Image 1 (cartoon, rainbow, N blue to C red):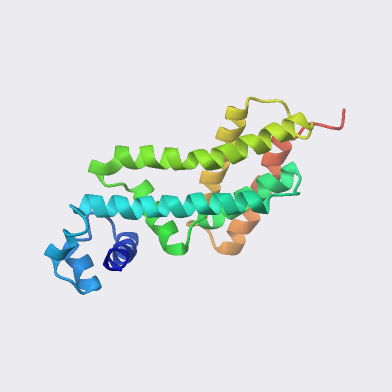
Image 2 (image 1 turned 30 degrees about the vertical axis):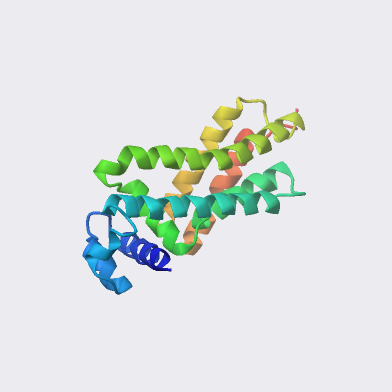
Length: 196
């Protein structure tokens, strides 16, 4: 129970502030224990931060599995649009984990930057596999233009990441309108031209 409380407090504080701005003493105070007691559960602040990060990635993996189930029976366009909208809205995470992940990936602690990137890339493989399956099925059925799957996936991630960041610049209704417009243009760019 204490480990869960420690990680929950750390998540909230790291999401609100940043790795460097959160001393272990503040986490301990919120949990209601003395700072040295944290070391019975985590060797260092770095280990605690990475444990919270790994929990965040585990939630993401779980939500990707749920998203995969949600796509059953949809056509290629609806599958890709559903993935885009679901991932953009929450990055497939709860609000606190989403805030934590945004802060962590945009402003990573210098000492942890490389390990965070490696773990994120490994966790993204599940979503990449889902996208690859959708793109390959779409090309096989003639709905999508023939392109390298890797290029389609890269283009989708660029669309996704750009759309995700746009949420911070615009009001929700403006963002929704922009996302719909961008999606339409993106889809026309990858769909097989059936007018010839």
